[in-house]
Image 1 (cartoon, rainbow, N blue to C red):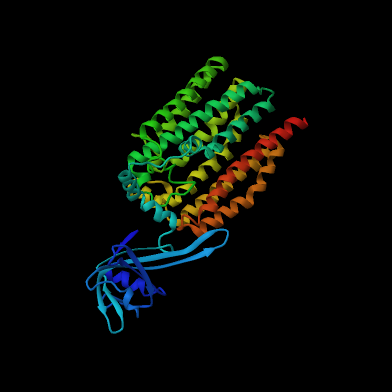
Image 2: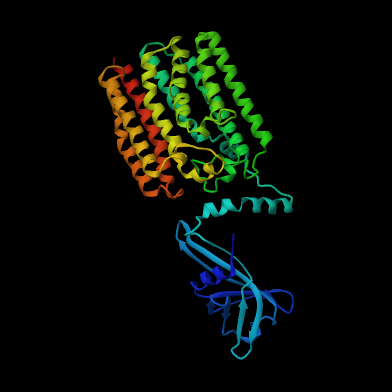
Amino acid sequence: MTALSPTVAVEKAAGYDHAIVSFLGADGYPFTVAGPFVADASTGVISVGPLDSSTLPAEGQEVGLLFSHIRPQPGIGYDERRYVNCWGAATIDPAAPMLRVRVTSATGWDEAETPFFEYAERTVDEAKRYMDELGARPRLSAWWTFFLTTRLPFLTATIVPVALGGAVAARDHRFGWGWFGLAMLGAVLIHLGLNMANDLFDDASGADKANVTPTPFSGGSRVLQYGLVSRRGVVTAAAACYAGGIAIGLYLAAARGWGLLGIGAVGVLISLAYSAPPLRLVHRGLGEITTALGFGPVTLLGTYYVCAQRLSGEALYASLPVALFIALVLYVNEIPDRAGDAAVGKNTLPVRWPKQRVINGFTLGAALAYVLIVVGALAGIMPVWTLIAVVTVPMARAVAAGLRKHYDRPYDLMPAMQRNIALHFATGVLLVVGYVINNVAR
């Protein structure tokens, strides 16, 4: 809840239909009664009544006045939620009979001004203090704790380039399911470690705490902010994932060629440099480049090398559209985080750039990705079947439309953010499908 000045509270109260009066009755039990009222902002007095004389508090007694509104939405829940709570001493006019309260303190919330999710986020510290008083902590099942902490759905960023790297290797008759599976497992472990490390460093910098408009697609996992997992637990899990991924990478380098060692080292280093000091590349507006490199050429070339034991110009080229689309996922997901990021000096591109430039940047990035697909297919660099990936153009246009319409409203922007993630995944999968069709048809 938000503290309100008495004057503002009385002004807001005037927009409601009735007041609910609460006080302790003579028997010591809470008593509540509703009635019509008049709010006078010039004097800060709210008059409730007429009321039955038996329902009035004692002269000078502290009373609470609640003004609230909510609209049921069948099958959905509620919206238009808002309320004002006022407190003050009672003055009784027995002739009316009437209750008058000069407001001395007040709180309130209006969903139109502060969306519910932001309202809930702003009360996290208060909720944690309350839980501490109870000696309790919120708990989730082991599965949901793992799901949230690792941000598991974002593994599509790894699955797509690994799958495409395998598909390119298959075109060169160098694919092996065992090696491919190990490459996938190693890349997944590094990605999970990266997700948790990013949460740790954003928590340490204050970026996630300063962000009061997180969404399912941005603002981190929130498990640290909500006290669902200890910091030590996240550190341990991140280290374990990195250790597992590095161990698999070393084995693959020894088995398939030490040239893989350089690719893997670059991948691990940029995954840490992304948010870890001293580089903290995302704080310098380089997050998109880092993400594109890591989940584009590094992952795809690494997978190809594991399968084919050499590098490939075609694999590098095929990684570029995927790299652009995953960079755009980060780019769009940074938009609702702007205020929190700016507060701690995390100068992402959406923090640095005005709205129209950010939207133009998305449009240009998506257009370039499609140009690369078309040119690559028509020039014979990639199979002509990969042209099927351009069927996702309407998805890109829908994301751009969502940005234009909801840029400054984080929760209304969520469908566009979700569609943008689907855009990366769908385009990448269709590129893989294009390769598979080519490999089967030849």
